[in-house]
Image (cartoon, rainbow, N blue to C red):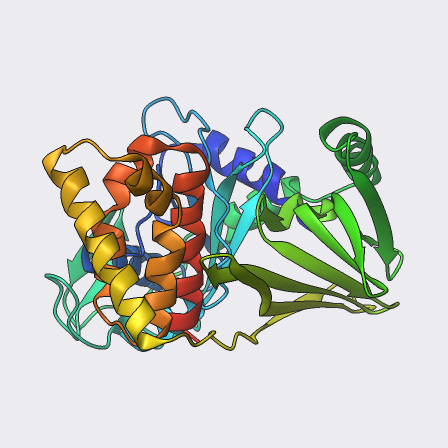
Length: 378
């Protein structure tokens, strides 16, 4: 079993970016340009490594390999994006890896690319890249290549050596459990459970009882063996269930208008552990978008648009405007879920101004975008 934190350290220590791994300060899957560049790197790494895994490490500065971290990213449908745009797509996983020196809300992203052995190419046009294009790694650069190429295995022995040096051991696991419960989450209700005598899942959060059911907020869930964060949220609530073979997380989102809010089930993530040392994660979107009166939504939508225009022009906000602004990300989300197609575009236009405000307002923006992303690829 590979400790993903050790694996990232091994990759960063090996040398600069190479034909089997790349590093990024961040990725942007919310724009055509960002998606295109991500797909180009996936294509190039898959073609350059036909017989071994390749990796992208996200949250690292190019100069000096400084680990800065990125926001927790839980888009389980990233494989759908790869399948939609690539011919002979590799298998993709995105994991959120913990590093002790990072703030609680930051992780390092690890993209693992498992090739099929076939030549991967763009299925259709995206941004400035043409459908049918093939990419390969030329050192640390992803370059377009001719159709008549020969795939060679030159990295397997290097990658295997790196992965072997990143294998987990009992000391790392015990240190991880103690750190999770006694240090990072000493003020929260914390638990752990061992599955199949080798997998250790830890979780912590504030608990409350509703009609005999336990719900958690400020939730943090980690697979300690691999130093992978499975779930993190400062706002949403989750319920947990488990048996001897599996661990299931059901996430709820708090949505509503005016003072009429309620929790809606968003997504169910089930991790099944096997005796042979493997596990698989199954994610199911169970969200039924709430529907509201269209006349009320038109009023809210127009109010939001007027607020964004004021922010763009630097017009001072009145007290009522400030109150409406606190709800802007969530209400734009509700408008989009009720067939206001331009609401997503308007929300993204507001991003720089909401980021400038910071705090809970920008966190609300990120949570709204995360839900939109999940719904899009469902």
